[in-house]
Image (cartoon, rainbow, N blue to C red):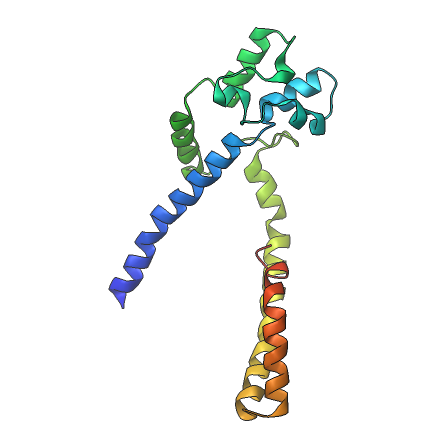
Length: 180
């Protein structure tokens, strides 16, 4: 049993790294990165327009091309933005820097609130914990009595109807889970 638990714990590391790599690649490929958004603000456009201004193949600084929104903007300003957000380094270096920052709980500064992300997380943690605890309590208050009654009346009309209800409601469980 201990070997199984150790194996499962060790499998969490590559799984977490794979998820982080996948998220990193998706964010790098998405149009309308932080540089395009700042340039749009600089030019007086809103953040929705900045996604239209960016090149369709990801963040312009990450892909090495010039953004459509950056035309007419001082090159030194764009270089300063690239240095500020780390786009002056290659993608693998940015990924490993990100892993190091996450390992030390340095999640950076919120782009929209201009506050450390860890402070924002700590500020909202009590509400998240409260919702998770209340949801868990509610689920167990419903599922344990329901399971006992279904076991005692196996094959009855109640058992068939509740089984049907559970099967029909199963696709909607993700909308109401505490992790959402």
